[in-house]
Amino acid sequence: MFKNLKFVFLFICIILFCLTACDKNSGYSNNGDINTQDYTKEEIKEEKEEQDIEDEKEEELIKEETEKEIVEIDYNKVKPNELGHIMIIMYHGLVEDNPPSPYQRTIEGFKKDLKYLYDNGYRTISMRDYIDNNISVEAGCTPVIITFDDGITTSFSLIEENGELKPTPNSAVDIMNKFYEEHPDFGRNAVFYINGDNDPFAGAGTLKERLQYLVDNGYEVSNHTYSHAHLSKLSADEIQEQVGKVDNMIKELLPNYTLDSFSYPFGERPKEELRHLIEKGVYEGKEYNYKIALREGPSGPFVPINHIKFDPYNVPRVRGSEGEEGDLWWYLDYYDKHPNYRYISDGNPNRISIPKEQENNINQTSLGDKELFVYTIEE
Ligand SMILES: [Zn+2]
Image (cartoon, rainbow, N blue to C red):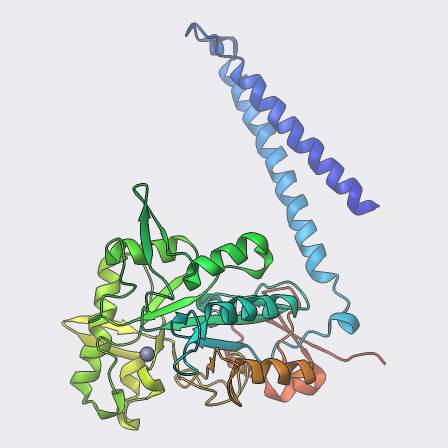
């Protein structure tokens, strides 16, 4: 009831704000005569001050409401586990039918994946939010990250229709856009790892227009080496060329864009002594930096960045497929049977909530300014 009253008050504030705004407009007459002379400077100043106070009140109300929502989860009911698994799903292209390998997914299969994920409480997050540990999916939900390698046309491409560029029907982006329209709380997030030598997302538009479409619509773009290289066979210079060339290419096309995740072609890492060249290197005088790098397969547990087992340059992914053990549908079934392994959000990006039994798995230094909250379930 109290909450409702607050909303009524907020509503009245908004109405008052609108009315005041309308009043101000009526100070200008249609014939161009300026009636603002009717207002003295003092009056305008007073009005502005009043407005500022109103705005502040409004802001405070909204802040209170948000804080209230965040604080009020029932830990016994939601059972947040913010050290649980976050799957990163790896797709390549989509096909009509008969995928040539478990790396491809059918159009229907991809739609089925999205629906299952949504219906079972998974919500997409961006790679940036994953890296920044800024996870804001609603309380009780499990974040999931969708990725596409190789810049394949069926993952994303544009067609021109009536002079306008739009995603190719039944490309993964087109499917995700439509799914998002119907289920906005699923989020619209996916990362596209591209090469430089194969005309990424071949179709209509320039490469700049294609990349711009992705980032303008909430998707992310990043680096998969220039020519889909076998990094384990390359020298230090060759690795930096492979990584740096695509880094420079994307930054040239998207000037203010930050790249921070990398995907190893074939899931293959450089020789051990050269692995640091993924994190940081230089090519043609320009430095690149990556905070995490992804494998092609479940090379380890899908732990989030606050977990002691999180290994930033060896981050596992699961194939978006239902074919074999260790593929997406195997994991979905596994998490269905063992929900306590899933990351369950507390709904508050600033607080990391973990059950008591996870206490020894927290990497304290990774927490930054996040608050750690350890709770015990009351039986
Ligand atoms: Zn690849």
